[in-house]
Length: 424
Ligand code: COA
Image (cartoon, rainbow, N blue to C red):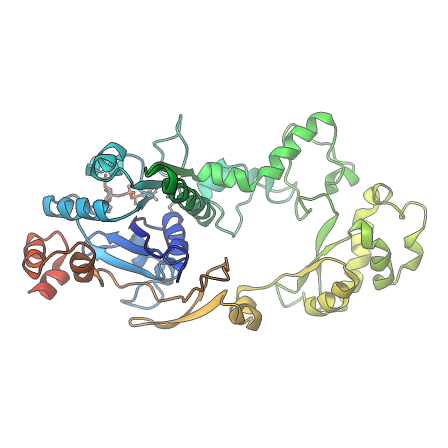
């Protein structure tokens, strides 16, 4: 038994934010029915294609464990089928541009009339207000959510991060909203609207930077390297390079091989509680109690020199040796892992966080499995569906259409040419 077994999701999502959400729900056991435009499908199927005529990794890695139905939701027969899907499903998830669902005739009021128990969950770029009509992509959200202004180095421009906090991050927020609404429906019997705006999702993840904005009113941010370096603060939370958000001084330092390997680095934190261990490891035992070094406030104006000395030591070790030496001493360090190293990581493969799937068009590919593990709801990662692979199956087994009905629907063109042939 899976946690969300019996829950049917009408998955009207595309690109990344919505699909990450419904993929999680599928991994937790929901039946996710992905509705795609006939002959076209989710735009990511053909985006960043690496294997000719095969669904891209962009698509396959975001749409595991789903079923795909081709359906033109603007066609009369297509609307009939969509109405049946709304009746049968528990949750409609969408991340169309604002207004698209209303234009289709399936806005919130229409949905409630068809199925009052339905939960309608949306990702939008912005919440209600000035920008609510904007189309939004990942980096726009990172910028508008406060992340970019606080990422990067003090003397450089704002930076976006490689982690897709706008898309996948908001998908996660939406998934939580959906299961919460399902939980509430158990008591009320009613559906509700769930909205996760990408700007809000990014801001939620950048919460500590708004914390720092307010602390600035009471003086400089002493844990920022900028303070130790004597550089004055401006009006807004500055970019903090690789400083840690929690206040413990930390830097990314070179390790053995850095001259040729762009990822031969480690993150190194000089946590106050283990300062003495740090001193021993790097061969500076006198620093343990020396004036100007013994306490964190005393060290603030010497952090550049201290980290330079630590780096002299890390450069004599590989990033993994640094880990092996520091971990037993409770010195927090983190190797900078490349995606190549992660893809090959045996530990991540053993836990199912890295998985391999077989795909009929592209062969075997590596993917990220479910990052959340439930002890009573195991996840088996299945490949993403081909476009319209389950059209007939869904029409018959979920919606109860007869062979004759399926023929009629296929003849109308509402479910695409391929399925028409299949039905004949
Ligand atoms: N049958 C018929 N029409 C369909 C359809 C189907 N099965 N599925 C989608 N469409 C139509 C939509 O109704 C819409 O038509 P309309 O503009 O005439 O109303 C059209 O396809 C395009 O949808 P849209 O969402 O506007 O796609 P886009 O490619 O123009 O924009 C985004 C893409 C991501 C910018 C936009 O969807 C968006 O801002 N989404 C919300 C925020 C978001 O999730 N962004 C991150 C994505 S990772």
